[in-house]
Length: 452
Image 1 (cartoon, one colour):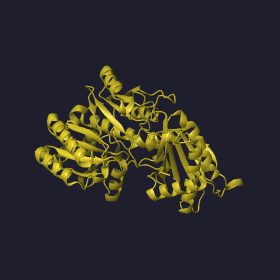
Image 2: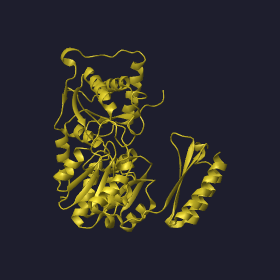
Image 3: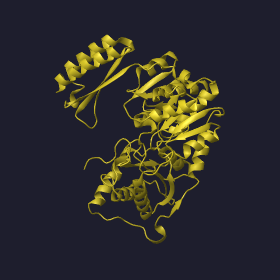
Image 4: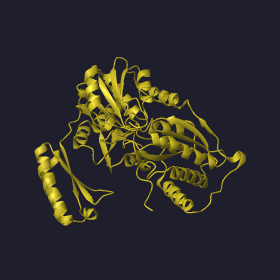
């Protein structure tokens, strides 16, 4: 069996890849593995369970809650809330485990399961591996040791979860948002109540779109992967800015008052400068991935801020931040982690902090975001090649060296073998789009000839 857990939990087509039986089995396995690890020692265990509004989340939640309770874990069911809300509540309530049912920005037919450890942090890889192993062992016939009588878990709805989380978000803001009109695109997702409530409590005049989830319309032509509606709404309402979330609201992209996109790199740059002013940017360092635009790195260097780069994926950003004690990190896609206030990417918090910077400075988001210039970026996927030889091909190394010489300090080359497909991604940045296309095209040809 292939590994169930990917970089962001278990994910697949609901009722196809991800069934009620699997959700139940994984929940029981998680309870047993954490008990064996000593997590529950000396007390009655508790889990926080939340979901996004997908229709499939209803039956998957029922299966997950049933499995946990049958294994002796008390369950606090928080309902439809963002992923970072479940992480926060897991920590704030002293729970032993958090579970979020969501497939994030994926289309409605998909769903997923993400586990959080005590404190709201991502479950360690070795525990995920053990859960998967135990799940598979019992799926194929081994019986469970089941509690009976008073030993079974109790289930209750924790309706205070939304208010607790919103109070946390508003409480960490450095200033209020009075005077700002902000359009929020909730992607018909998990933040449809949380985000408008938080922005309103912080003083903003709020206009919402994509805030009528029906279980089927999540991410459908809206949210952070489809900014067209938000851009139009910001201009139509004369708003200072717009904020877009994805289905589980762990990411945030923005739109300035003219309707232009402000991506994750630009948001990270704005927040880095704001945090440094408040002496909150530890070691004057921000963590980003190798896919961040070169313009971000050049801007941060110009401002005296060091950039540490990691592999692609917010989990690698978070690992680096926790290991070195850095306070801010993120991705171009809008996953931004402010570690003093969140254990994972938090789209609502990111949007609030971005709006707070606009309110604090009195400067338009367009002006704040201009601290960095996005260099033209060209990405070519080269299929049907041996991705394992990217690092060992002499012909390819020579071509990359020549390309880097041509681009100089205002451009760069990145070759990435796909983690799941037989292809290599060729990414080239340059000050001029025509040069970026030319260099990327030549490198793609070399990849084909050298690795084909």
